[in-house]
Amino acid sequence: MQQQWPEGPNADPDAARERYKADMQVSQGALRELLRVEMPVAHLGLAIAIIATIVAAVVWSPRTGAIIAGAFAGLFVIALAVALLAGSRGWDAARAAYRFTFGWADWITP
Image (tube, rainbow, N blue to C red; front, side):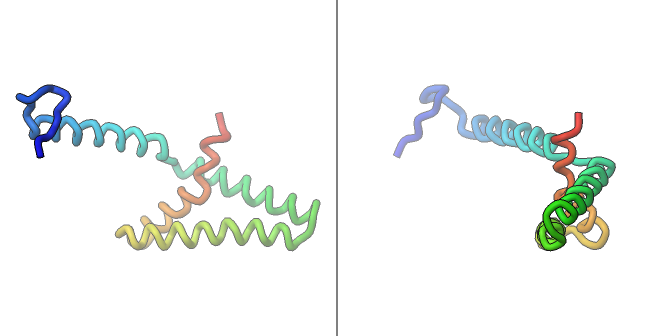
């Protein structure tokens, strides 16, 4: 089977592979930058989650507030398990899970 290259029949497969790898690294770097969250932003997300839990518990019922708090706790536990499976240990894993769980505040702040 003969491969078809956009550059024509005289294309260098190694050069094409290197361009692909370079493009993928740039793309992944842009995604990492988009998803990068700082700790103060995660603290803000935690504060918003606590306020939303309290408001839901007062307005609707304490059970609703407990469900919201449980959802955030469950998300943190899952993120912590993923961080541990990915190779992070100790406080690094906890920080990664915390930033993942509450880092969404970066999307709602200016």
